[in-house]
Amino acid sequence: MSATPSTEVVRIEQRTCDCGCAQPYPSHVGLLRYGASETVFEAALMHGEAKQPHLWVLLGTGPWFDDDSRNCWLTVHAWLDDGNILTSIADPSGSPFTDEDACGGRWLSREDVLAQEGALEWAIARRLQLVAQVPAIALHLGAEA
Image 1 (cartoon, rainbow, N blue to C red):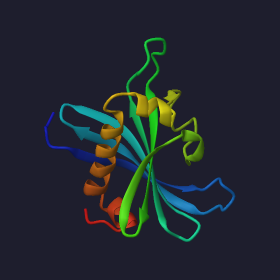
Image 2 (cartoon, rainbow, N blue to C red; image 1 turned 90 degrees about the vertical axis):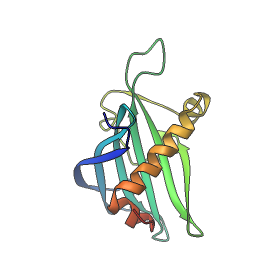
Image 3 (tube, helix red, strand yellow; image 1 turned 90 degrees about the horizontal axis):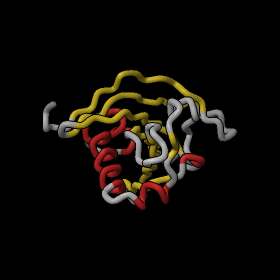
Image 4 (cartoon, rainbow, N blue to C red; image 1 turned 135 degrees about the vertical axis):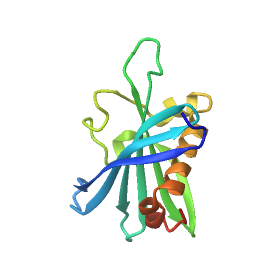
């Protein structure tokens, strides 16, 4: 594996928001490679109430818990505020992702992620990688890829 991070978008699909607004949005699914590791991602390019861009990212990881061998999934939410991209670890219940997206894995709560040493930094690094390497995501958030 290359030490240079790389991102591969495997497919882009149109989805419809299920919050009641029924707005369509593109969802990018693929692989993030970094160091000798890789992770699966899904990135939902959505808009908020005032049409401001929001990015929701679902990241797949290996098992985190000794008593549960399922792969884990964490949720990242990014949005613009005064021209800056803000990033937060989110609970999955507020995201556009479904149980089907998690492929039978274990959803991680915000508390689960923040309790794991290095997990917050890892998640933010993956969000930065997506913005830097996927032009459609950078354009959505008004950043330069």
